[in-house]
Image 1 (cartoon, helix red, strand yellow):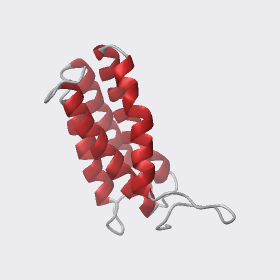
Image 2 (cartoon, rainbow, N blue to C red; image 1 turned 60 degrees about the horizontal axis):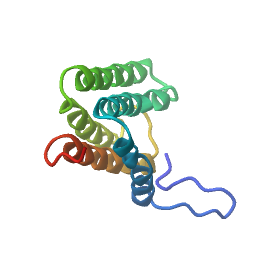
Image 3 (cartoon, helix red, strand yellow; image 1 turned 120 degrees about the vertical axis):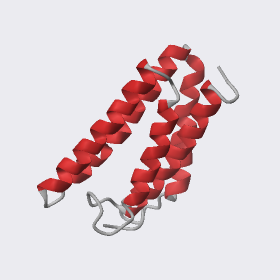
Amino acid sequence: MQNSLPTGAGASLPSPGALAGLVFLIFAPLHFFVPLEASIALSGVTLALIGGAYIGFAATATEARVFWFELMTAMGFGLVAVLGIWVHWIFLPLGLALHAGWDHLHHRPGFGAPVPQWYISFCVIVDLLAAGFLLLLYGVVPLI
């Protein structure tokens, strides 16, 4: 797996951290333009989607157990997302923080699906930025 962002003929892309910051700055403000219930639903869907990202990586694995391991984990993140929507919003930043840990575990050789190293760093940063943002948005210092 490659350690840097993929580039085309001489193209230069930002670092994973800069790209994560840009993605966060594009999507986080959406929460200020929708009602609280819609914001929580959007956060839950986002958690479920990012939880499922590793299923795509697992499809490239040579062992079926890796695919099933990633699929079961993605389903777990989907469950946490549902809990965040139906039970309490606190499950959403908790799920994002747990997903950052899941991302980080993929730095270990042989752990889970083969994932490009740049993606792991990118995803950890997005997850933690989003988790902190949701804590501020919904609870610690409510912004909406």
